[in-house]
Image (cartoon, rainbow, N blue to C red):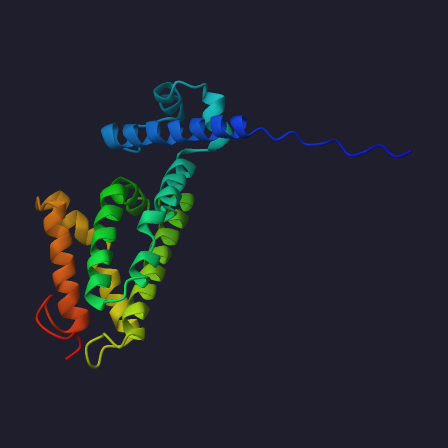
Length: 215
C-alpha cells in the first residue's frame, strides 16, 4: 500500500510571527538608512537594531539591495496609495485632488527609498533593477490617471492621454518633491496644493473652481 504524502502543517500564528519579524527587520533597516546612510549600514547592524540574529536577517533578505527592494514593494502595494482611488472619483477636479493627496503621501513615505535607488545608477545591478521597476510603476499609475481623465473628456483641447501621462509623470515624480519639500523647505501641504493647482491648469485647461474643465 503506497504511503500517503506527508501533510503540511500550516500555522497562522507562525505566519504572523514571521511577518512581524520581517516587518521589524525592514523598519530597523529604514531607521538605520535614514540615520547614517545606506553605505554605512551593514547587515549585522540591521540585525542588532532589530534584535535578531544575523542569520535571521539573511533568511528573509539576502542583502541590503533586497531590503530596499522590499521597502519599495511595501510602499507600492499600499492600498491607500492605489490609483484606483483616482479612477473611482466621478468629477475630474476631484480626481486630481485625490491624486495630489496620494502623491504627497507616497513621496512622504518613499523619499528615503527613492534617494537610495536613484544613487545606485552604475553601482549596483540589483538596486538599478529596483529603481527601474519603481519608475515603471510610477509611469503606469500616471498613465491610468491620465486615461481616467481622458475617458471623461476632461483633458484640455489638443492634449492627448499620452501627453497628459507624461505631464503627470514629471510633476508627480520624486525629484520635484525632493526639490520643493526637502531642499526648498515647502510644507507637504503646500506641495499638495501646488500639485493640484498646476495639474488642473496643465491637464484640464483651467485653475480649480474657474469653470468647466477643458473649455
